[in-house]
Image: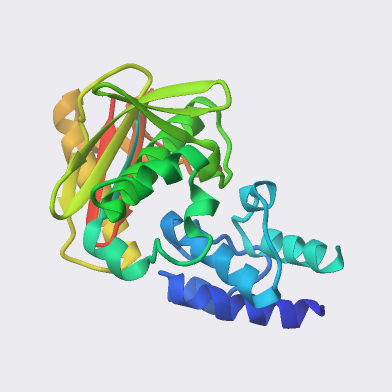
Length: 83
Length: 187
């Protein structure tokens, strides 16, 4: 999947959970879910479940461990889609 | 060292859905899922166990500076009146208090009663809440350590672990917020 397409799909998934609009507007690969977007850790699991549904993939505990920023989410989705 | 975590009960009801498919399997071990399904109020058990795991994670990352998302790796267990959370070879003790409004857990390396002070926020944005809780901590710390606020500073490491600087000494600090509630604990 093209990076731009992947980022826009991730943006749509993340949007309901963000608590910092400015950081969301300026979202890039380096954006951190918790530090920048102020997403509550209780909602990280919802993002993971939404990603699973959107891309029809399943994330294991090792994948979840790194799911803290946009870059890691992109890498994990790409690896799963390739596999 | 201390780790704490608060869950706003209304927020947990409106901003999360513990009954969505695969939610429990992602966060809780088989044993914990059994505890939840057999609890009198599964909703409360979900969020009690969650706050215990988060409090333990915050204590763990004070001892082992790092950052990761592995709630399932932190397993809660209760023996008599004592609750513990284990992660690999790490073990800590967790005290939890449940009120009609929030659930708060505090993790320590030995058995201790809860020391966390709870704040009810008047403002709703994450930024404003963060400012309120930091100001409250500085005020409280000035009292406890007997220094003026100008000698205190709160900092956050690159792993997101907060601490409070009292003159040249660095004291462990734990901050938590969820919905309309926040809490802090320091040693």
